[in-house]
Image 1 (cartoon, rainbow, N blue to C red):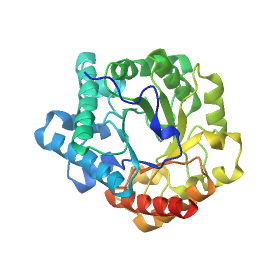
Image 2: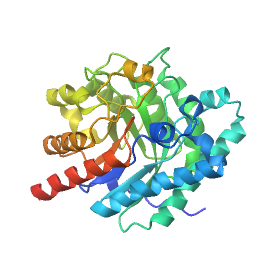
Image 3: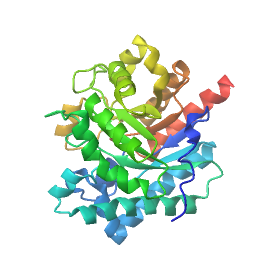
Image 4: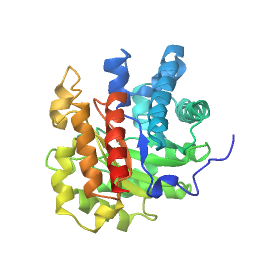
Length: 320
């Protein structure tokens, strides 16, 4: 194994625009026809057709970054590759560790094939222990650290540059995750999700969750993101402002303006409007200059990321 390229110096911490990927699971299910039990995209790693689809997905998004001269952050397909979700699929800890390792190996292959002249950053992706939309029985930070230590320890032995926890819905789990990453000396990124009113599913305000995580974690995350919500959902939280805004660097928005409950019940994919989503991201970038990382979440695909990249890159060029 080669050494991680950017673990000691994350390039996305500068002013350059970085893209990331879109709604992997919804793209695979609705656009590519794959069955993903419990939204577990990692099941495709052992299937030739599925693995090819994952690689194609990575390269298609990297091509958008190349076209717009952006850096690129790629998340591993391991959002569900944690112990409790692995148990549901009958996987041993050994098998689950191998899956997490293989997922990073796939991204290394994608990075080499893409041959970008901009940084291609590899992120080990971690999901919530429970349902990302419903907090359920909240863990303590100590319990969350013990739980997320499994993936953190595996990723630390790979070429992953950082670990990103996506769809976090409460501060205690975010703190525990950050501590698990710190224990293996890995940079951590926390991405919170919010409801239509800009508040976390736990009921805590977004800014409060970010400040609490920064204050309580043994090592503060490198930065924060918002994912799995439409820009109209968190607009009010951003307008309220506060010192926490400077810690927010990325957005991975849903295509749909529907609530989490509506998305859960939906049987068809709401693709939203890619052009409108691109303009909304340009407006976000214009208001909050700390935002430098852009991608998509549920319902989005390369069309949405292309639209976002075009609008954000154009607004950045005008500002320069």
